[in-house]
Image (cartoon, rainbow, N blue to C red; front, side, top):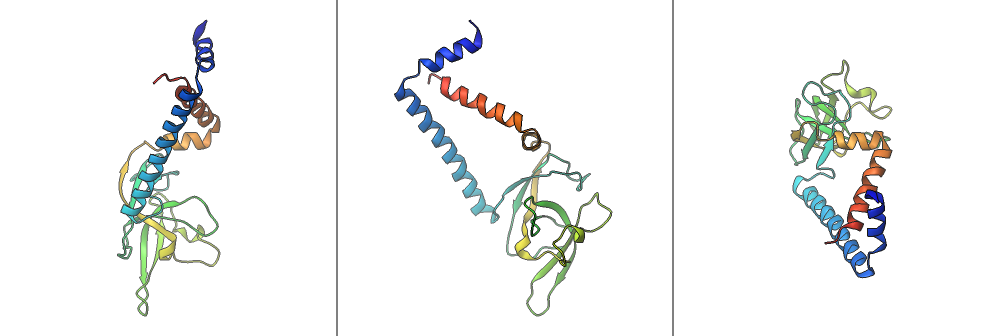
Length: 180
């Protein structure tokens, strides 16, 4: 009959109680993942404790597909640190190095100018119109560690959505047809 026929028969033989148990188990897994994410947000002090490098602008230090771990403290950003920031009007965070820091004498606030290690010019062209510096609220965190290449899974699933849907469908079938 084949694998597909066995899968269809398996789905037909599912009882309501078994389906509810599997749905609750799946809900508990999703809830646990969300709790872990929120706990990481609290520990690291950033809204996004993990980000994926999406371009080659930070090569050779970080390559496309590397995962960065972020941390944010009250200490001011210093030149040379790698920061992840959001720019007004853009949804995707950017990973670049702080190349200049301007500390305001009257308030003590720090303004930051960034540049990708592999780029020829600074990031003023990426900032919002009329903006020449990043402010504290733009910066999501400092890079404190990384895992090479692991983020390719995220990149592939965003660039080729069909793979994401196939993976979700396969995992759904696995959950539905499991007998435990």
